[in-house]
Image (cartoon, rainbow over all chains, first blue to last red; front, side, top):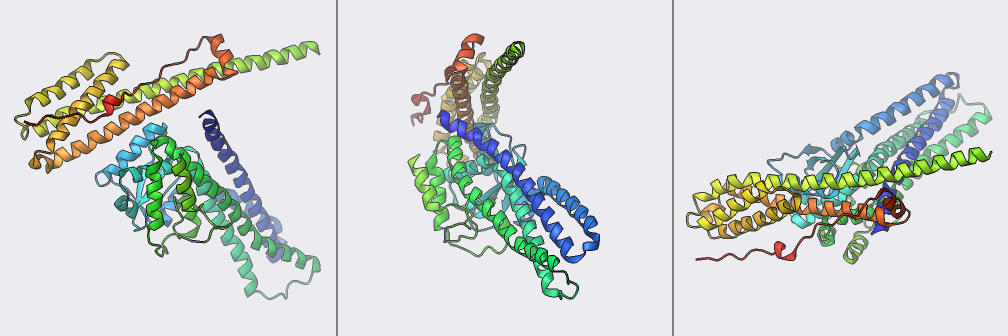
Length: 299
Length: 183
């Protein structure tokens, strides 16, 4: 029991450190990207572009930090849940906040037939839980409680800050890298005569290709591990592993549907992969459901 | 040089002392706070009882004894002074309420009453919350007791004279569904 406690608090500290590391990493990536972009296009205005890219990256991180929850909610088209309409949803989350001692999150609902849910925000005081209408319709009380406890432990463990930040920042790096690469399709090489210049530009291109992939791999590896931890600490709140296990089983049987409305960047936020990809590996956002159910059944 | 070493050791000792003193204080406060949460939920339950009685009164004319049971249990809860007796009274009230809901099965009109259904849902949610607040209380007791039983916390606990605190017992008999006589 003691070791479980320690690992629980360690997890929170780890997440806080990782969030800081991630933000610094992102700023560095922005910095390097800015360097190559300015070098490739306008060496004359090198300093101005560098300073601009630093200002933009800091500005972007600050906005990402404070607005990422709103961006995530808007990208899946979620609406605030009305207390009168979703009283059971409210009752369950209120009970779980008492069991976990964390503040009440804001509750949202997204219109989707799939059984799914996610949590977002920057800390437990500014947190949001969102479930699909499919989850509210198809899960019984114990199952819904298991799923919501899983989401609440993402909040309690400070997973939400880290995951939401990465979701927003990884998306941005991908966009900038892609813009940089595409710009070469529309440009001749007439104004580049210097050989050293060419090498730098080549390094820039390689960097622009690799940066989003590497950042994404890091994000996914962390995301998969986090799901197991959230399953375990969610059960600590409900003391009923069967609820979550049954819910995961229902999710497993759920028919895979096209989810064009959900942006791929926010996939790691959900309790199960909204795209239902069958192949497991480096690029999976979630660990296999069967494995999660197996672990829950042993609790 | 020796003076400095002594000074540093003393400073470290003071910091460790302060750390443990504060740790016990924080963990103890958490326990008191979670105890207050149990109280809040019990109070909410008591507050809903008059509404339930007035919703049910018209339908259950022949169940006077159960109504008085509930009203009495509520009075006992509101007049309870210390926490153990409050918790006990809360359990009694829950048992009395359960017999009302069990009896309601015999009254189809009552079961169709929107107001009654809402109160039933509300009260069952409060039952969950009472259980969760007790669980949280016991979790905090566990943290506190661990911190004073495990070395080196044990050392400081005896220095500051901090004692372990008892868990809230939840009796099996109180969790059972009450038997209701039908006449």
